[in-house]
Each structure stands twice: as C-alpha cells, then as structure tokens.
Amino acid sequence: MTSIPRDAWPDVTLPLLADPYRYIQRRAGRLGTDTFRSRLLGQPTIFLTGPEAAAFFYEPGRFHRQKAIPELVAHVLFGEGGVQRLDGEPHRHRKAQWRDLLAGGALDDLESVTERMWDDALPELEAMSSMDVFPQTARVLTASVCRWAGVPLARHLIGGITDMLSSLFLHAGSVGPEHLKGRQNRKAATEWAQRLVQGARSAEAAGRMDKVARIARWSADDGAPLPEAAAATEVLNLLRPTVAVAVYLAFLAMALHRHPENRVRVAEDAAFRRAFVQEVRRTYPFFPAVAARTTGPTEWRGEEVATDTRAVLDLYGTSRHPLAWDRPEEFRPERFLDWPGDQWSLVPQGGGDAAVTHRCPGEDATIRLMCLFAREFARARYEVTTPEAEPNYRAAPALPKGGFQLSGFRAG
Ligand code: HEM
Image 1 (cartoon, rainbow, N blue to C red):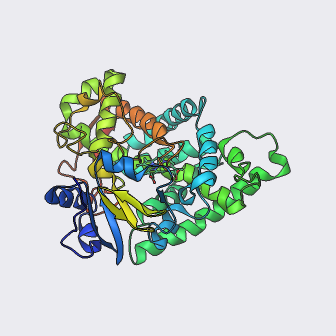
Image 2 (image 1 turned 120 degrees about the vertical axis):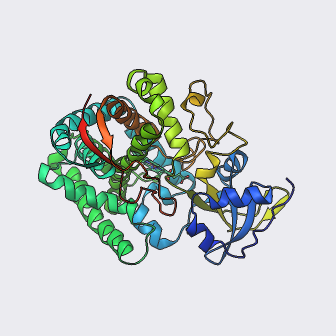
Image 3 (image 1 turned 90 degrees about the horizontal axis):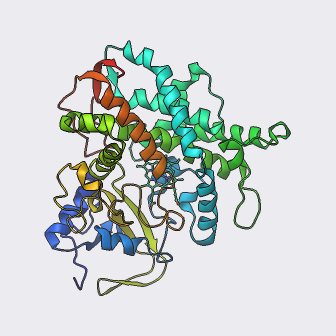
C-alpha cells in the first residue's frame, strides 16, 4: 500500500450516517486499502481501519482531540473540562488519576456491590411479565455505580437518574427533539454532579475516601484543584459509561440466545465466560469510530497528510478486520481462550496503552460487569419474546428497536 485512494463520494457524511458501523470497512475493502480520503461534514478527512491504521492513529503526539467531533455531539457525550478533550501532559496527568481511581480493590468492590444490587432487583424482575434487558440492567447498574462511587440515591430516584445518565449516550448523536433531550439532560446531570462535588469538598466531607470525594480532590497538571465543573464532568465520566454497560448486556443476552451451545460453559467455566464476553465486545456494535486531528504535517501510506486534517478510526471494523482475525464474521468465543492480547486489534473501547492514549480506562470494569451478568443470564431460566431482534446498525448505540425482551425470568 503506497498511496491513499479517494472515496468516490466527495463527502461521506450521508453514507456514513446511513451505515455508521460498516461503511468505512466496506469502502476500504472495495478500494483495497486500510486508509482512504474524503470529506466529513465538508472537511478533509482520512478514514482508517485495521490494526496498522489503529497503531498510526494512536501514536503519541501525532493527533489531538480538539474540534475532532461536532461540538453539539461532544457537549452532550463528553461535557466540558473532562479527560476526553485533553491532550499532551494535561491528558497524561488526568489519566494517571483515572488509573489510581480504578486500581487496587476498586473493581472487586464494584463487582460485589453490583451482585448485591442484582439480588435486590430480582424479586421485581421475576414478577415482570416482560423484562427488557437494557433498561432493567441499566437501573441495576445505576444503583450499583452510585453506591460504589459514594453517591446517595434513594430507591425512588433510581429510575430518574438512570434516564438522565442514559440520555447522555442515547441521545448525543440524535437530531431534533431527541438531541434537545440530551442537551437538557447534560445540563441537569452537570448541575447534579456539581452539587455532589460541592458536598465532597465541604468541611464535613473531610476524610471521605469514596470515588466522588477522590475525584473532587483531583488536581490539574499545574497542581491547581480541578474547577468544579471539570470535576463534575469526571464524576459523570465514571457514572454514565458504567450505566452504558447495559447496552452490552442487551447484546450479551442476544448472543446467548443466538449461540445457545455456549450457555453451559458460560454458566460454569470462568475462563470461557470471559472469552464469550470478549467475543461479544468484538462482534457487537457499540461505538462506531473515534476522531482526532493531525497536530502537524504527517506521513502515512507514502503520502503527506496536512496539519489539522481530521482522522476517523473505525473501531467496529478494526475489531473484525481480516488482517487481525481469522474468519472475523464468525462468533467464536474459543478464539479468545489462547489469545495473547494486543493493543490494536480488539478496540471497541479504543486502542494502545490506556495510560498514554485516549483508550477507555473503564475496560476492565466493563469486562468484570459483563462477566458477572453473563454468569447470571446463563444460569437463569427465561423465554426470549423478541427472538428476531437484531442490533440497529443505523443507530449509535445500536440497541435493537423494540428492545430485547425476556419473559418468565427466574434466576438460577
Ligand atoms: C459500556 C462500555 C464502554 C464502552 C463501549 C466504552 C468505550 C469507550 C471509548 C470508545 C472511548 C474513547 C477511546 C478514544 O477516544 O480513543 C472511551 C473513553 C473513555 N471511557 Fe469508556 N467505555 C465503556 C465503559 C467505560 C466505563 C465503565 C468507564 C468508567 C469506569 C469509562 C470511562 C471512560 C473515560 C473516562 C474515557 C476517556 C478516556 C480518555 O479520553 O483518555 N468507560 N470509552
């Protein structure tokens, strides 16, 4: 590969919106490349897919995140002052605080709190004539992450807080009234999180060691305390994506239904369960892509790419790229039983070393939570009342229209 071809479309905004998960890989495949040029929202953009392109995209210093995605989307999804929009030393400093927050026994605690909250929710779930996996597990995860993080949450408020946090990832990319809902919820969520930070910074909170209190004490790279709004954004960066794990739980339930031959091993064998969860993360659509801009002129595939060119890395396609995966379209958890692991081929939550790149710091938490629910779902008895449900490949996240519904749920 010595040059970067152009897409036949001068601007791919419309075809990409029509097929956000598959457009880049399909087009790159047709052009016989892992990189092509076009425009996105009128601006010159290079589109990247596959492990080599992922390594290029995440090379430190080559790209920055300022103005990489439309401000309307970034505002609802990320908020203001959070780690997602930092680069260089400020980013590394914040990322180290994220690593400390989730280290030690933090994930063991999250897992045991979630197990308790799941047990508490079971009588209500078992009494339901129909249980939709995403909203119901999102409620359990909201209750769990709030308890774990030190956010007081009365039982009658769980539904409202779940809706508010879910709206930040369900409606960020929508248009019209749905987008407006996302904006309103971002405002409400930020005000709520700011009150949590104020509480954690008050004199009475001295000595508090919960997650919110620790974030409230985070500093910027110059040593100054984080502005209250930035700390609030980071509190939401902890709560919102943990609730978003429920999207994966809907796909997990779908995968168990599609591949029932795996059920017994998922129920009984922890190593296989983890492999199954990895295969769900590899094959089901969540974030289609991530975007950045070149910090200076850079060279790739034998061509110069100008300063401030936008680059879009295809996360979904890279995780199913034929260069990295044998028979990538097949759902085969066994492929992960002896997987040595690498930073560029399984990238549903970003690539590279999370301490350095923008890769998700919550990946281990995601896997732990998915394994817990995989065990619970595989051991439970229920009927699937929406057996034809498919991911909605036109939406991000790609939750099936009409949900994934179970009836007669009985824990195992
Ligand atoms: C639902 C499962 C999750 C998915 C699909 C997911 C996906 C992602 C993706 C694609 C990125 C951006 C990577 C990039 O920009 O290069 C990211 C970043 C991030 N995620 Fe997650 N994530 C999930 C769960 C979590 C959890 C549970 C947490 C917190 C405990 C979390 C916290 C973050 C933060 C703080 C960032 C920004 C990191 C940075 O900019 O350096 N995520 N995630």
